[in-house]
Length: 225
Length: 301
Image (cartoon, rainbow over all chains, first blue to last red; front, side, top):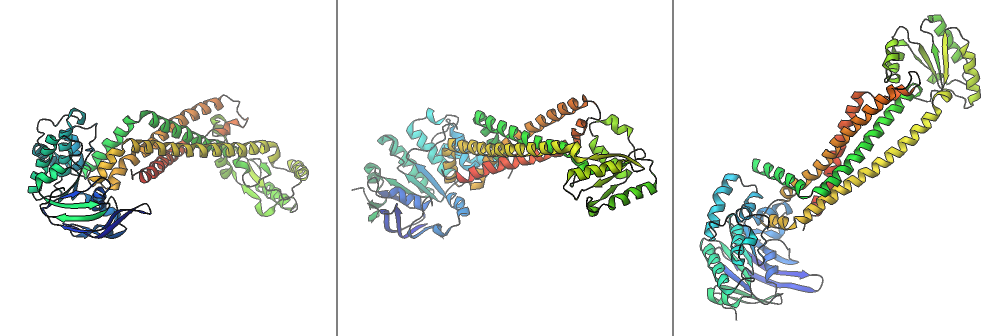
């Protein structure tokens, strides 16, 4: 599903954000990217969604080399990816329903699809009954659920989550992890960058560890260390 | 497809509401600049009416009595051609009664009373003379000679009729064209800035749109439509202004005594409509350029 071959990414002229990273992620896997701040976790996610392009090496997503993808095809790549962020990136002037519907609306989905899909996914993330709330009327955990619903409503092949529990207390974080686990069980590949020891140790999934841009560990059923 | 169009229209309308003050400034500036562009056209046309008789370096017009015989006309032509040093024979032009009547329609556009008194039968035909000699005194003495020829009604000299007007016309043209170009640039920059501000205000939304896979054009079109509409609305306002201005001008000119020449400054309605269409097109293009540049440049938020 995702393959990196000897990928290096520079920031500026002398900072190496990612050095010679190679890995393969199969369909349906749940992978943690771990490491301290600045170790290159977010950069890897941005390389996969082509918000960044590597100086060296190639990135393959769903069978295509996305570095060679024409600029005009990038939106179609993004439609196969869902993004979840530490700060949710919800639109404050839109309700829960509108925030989720927005993701379908802007890729030109017709109204009847939106009316059918959005309530389904809102129920899936456990926010049924809160469709008309605005983000500032929700708790942090609920806001992250909206963000996950928005990322998942288009049924992407891959979900990229950057520190999704970073702003949440441990109990709320567990709830979010249960939700991501449920989504993973529908066959969606999930890559999650985190430095939250507890969630990694509790889930026991594949762990790729980075240190200053270098992959130092790639372990099945790993822990944080 | 329908959902995309309705999305673009809803977003365009929302953009107007969100950003009232800047939008108003952009619309008003384009309105004022386009009004000035339109006025330039009208002033030009008005002066043209006044000068139409003298177009092409004509320095002297010999008006021939409407009842002059063919022999008399031929004799006048001969006399004119007999002065190849003073008269540019190649450019000598004879306007018969029909052609002269067509010209009169423009000259007396604002003076229907005079025009109604004229007809193809009673209008003088005319020889338009392009002088070869740069010496005005020579041309003037020639004119005095021609006045005495049989069949000649009157001889007019460009010097007496319009030199001042021609100078004035050139000056006014330069000033109005210069000012409208400057103001038009200001309007484009203001529209550009309005769209840039709108996009900056909505950078979070644009970021999310890009991440969930909206195409650049899908994001861009509402902003471009917003700018185009600002230009277009400005143009509509300027058309109203131009119409009112021309109305007031026409009424004002009607108050002058007939035969003073001021009446030829009236611009016909059909020409004003043409200018209005041009303004609508220019306004839309200016809006589309300003917003198009902004929407392309600031898409990477």
